[in-house]
Image (cartoon, rainbow, N blue to C red; front, side, top):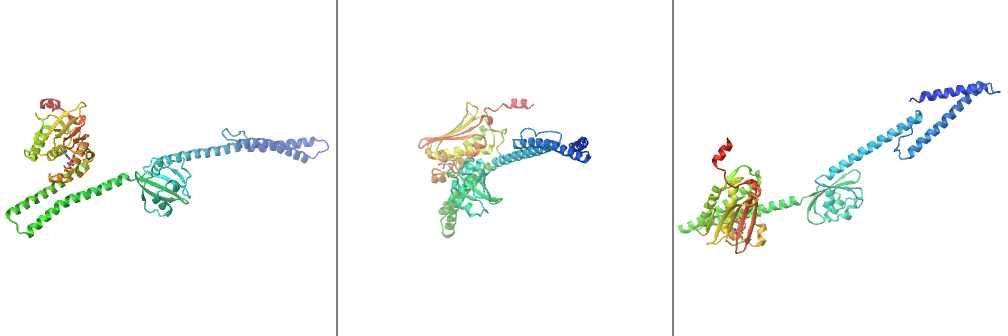
Length: 448
Ligand code: ADP
């Protein structure tokens, strides 16, 4: 307030000067008159100056206020300065608010859920791009549109108009490709927020789990029913020794079938629940393939020509021995089971040009029609159910093979033609393949 004292002093000086001037006016020797005249003159001067300064300030205020407010050392200068400071502070806090709003909207934009804000008339105020995608909206064009004019799914319209939002609803998206879970919440005065989530995958995996449980129950119930029948027969009927032995053989077959099924299920569960096999644990293929060959010979019982690599393969694959054994055994056993007597089953190993390793199991068996091939690795998928069961199949073998291949970073390729036989190729990436076993001496030296 540096202007206050000079202003008072100016008025005082003007008054005194006015008084002196009044004394000097001929015929008016009353000093009071001169003082009043001087005071009025001083006020007049100050008034004119104030009017001019006020006018400058008002002109500035009427404008965009982008320039500096008019500055002088007096009352109007301070007024201008303070008004400008308060305007600048408001501008700054408005900018900060805008930044906060932008950040807030970006956070909602990044949300894994669709978010749509509706006003009291159910018109769209704002929606993030996920909500726009879920409901088939255009975030810009559809603003201020009534949402029920754009999202016409009856379930959604009824939900929004019903006003009971305790539970989310499930509805198809407008293109009918996905299932959405939609939840509405009220806030403010009649405002609503609509949250949407794509639950297609969850629904699919729920359906798969239900199918899986139904399949497992069916697969277990069948041999159980047969076993129960045999038990009843043995309990109620007087059987000869020959009949009794035959029934016991059939019962053992059913029990074995259940055992195989349970062990395949356990293998699958382990494959799905355990971490990926180490990439630095090397498994020698030679002994592994020798074991597979021995199992195949037992299964074939001389009915097929079996051909395995000779001399034994020297390569190694990085991974889990039990998993690799299970995958290769499954492929070779399938080849034997689905190849009629007199057919040929061959296993070969080679390192491809890019360093990846390939195990191929080739048979001259029944072959598979093209339409079945993409589905063979689904759990319990069988081309011919009765043949699979008759030969001890569970319908889980190729599913296990595919899992093992994927866990080792590899792939399973199937080529087949009905009546022409099949080729199943397991390809492992170069990083998991060591073409030849390093000599022991070299290893020892390296270790030193
Ligand atoms: P399964 O226990 O029934 O053999 P898999 O998952 O191993 O189950 O195989 C799925 C289906 O693929 C089999 O039921 C069979 O129809 C077909 N299949 C698998 N391997 C062969 C093969 N080498 N030749 C012909 N069909 C095969």
